[in-house]
Length: 418
Image (cartoon, rainbow, N blue to C red; front, side):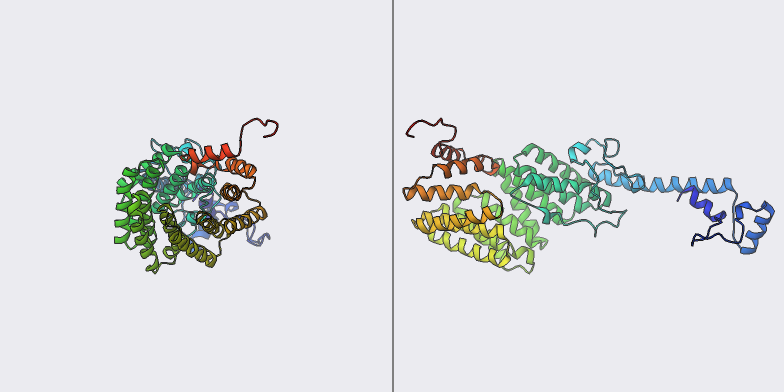
C-alpha cells in the first residue's frame, strides 16, 4: 500500500465514484476542529499526517522484508535472485537476476513472457511445457522453453522450474551443445540438493542427465542414471517416466538386450491406466521394429512398423504417420519389395511437398530404390545429402553422409559426358 492510499482514508476527493461533484466539501478543506468533530461523530479513529506516513513507511518496509525473505528462500534453492512483482522491469538485466549460479545470459532470459503471474498463485496459469516440444527442431523448442523462465521464476513453483530446466538441457543436448546441457543440469542438481524435491523432478533430472551422456557417446555413464530413474519412477507410480526410462535402457544396452528392455517398456505402457503413458506404444512399436531391423529380422520388423503406423493413424498426428510409413517403406526395400517401397516413398514425397516441407530421409530412400531398379538417382542422392548433412542426429554417421555425397556427385565439377 502506498502513501496515497493511506491519504485516501482521511481525505476524500470531492468527486464521487460516478464522477459527479458531491455537495459535501472535502474533509481536507475543512478547518481542523470541524474535521475532528466529523471524525468523532463517525467513529473513525484517525491519525495525523506524520503518523500516517510512519505507518506507511513501516508497512512497506515490512512487506519488502517479507518479499526479500521469500526471494532468499528461492535463491537458497536455485541460486537465483527472484524479482518481486512490485517492480518488474520490462526486460531482464544482470542486477535483476544475478548470482554465482544463474545469470540472465546463462538462463537465456531476454524478456518477460507476458504470462500473468503473482506470488504463489501462478501454478495453475503456467503452460504445459511438454506440449511445446518439437523434437525435429530442438533449437526452436529451447527458445520457447526459455521464454517461460521469467514466469516460472516468478511463480515460486519449484517442481515446475526444475523440470522446465531439464527440458532446456534436453533441447541443448539434441543440438549437440553437450557442455551447455550439463551446465544447465548442474544447476538443477544443485537446487535438488538444497531442497526436498518430489520424485518426478528427480526422475526427470536423471533421465535428462543420462540422455546427454548417451547423445555424447558415453553410454556407460548414462546406463546407471536410466536405471535409477526407472526404479524411482516405478516405485512412485510415475508410469509415463517409467516407460521413458525403460525405453532409454533399451537404447544404451547391447543389441542382445535391447529387445528385452523394449518389451518391458511396452508392458509398462500397455498396462498403465495413465493415458499419457499408454501413448508411448507408438514409439515402442517403432523401437521394437528397429531392434528387429538391426538384427536383420525384417519380417518381425515390418510387423512392428505396421503396428506403429496403425497406432499413429488412430492418434491422428500427420507427422508421426508419415514417419511410420517411411519405416514400413524402408523395410519393404530391404525385403526386396522395391517397387512397393518406391511407390510408398514417392507418396510420402508428395505429402511433404504439399505441406511445404523437405525430408532428406525420403529423398534417400527414393534414391536407393531407383538405383536398385537401374534408374538415374544422382539428383535424389544430392538432395538427400543437402538435407541430411544439416541434421545433427546424423553427425556420427559420416560414412552414410559420405556415400550420399559421392553418389550425388556433390561438389564435383561437371565434365562432358558425365
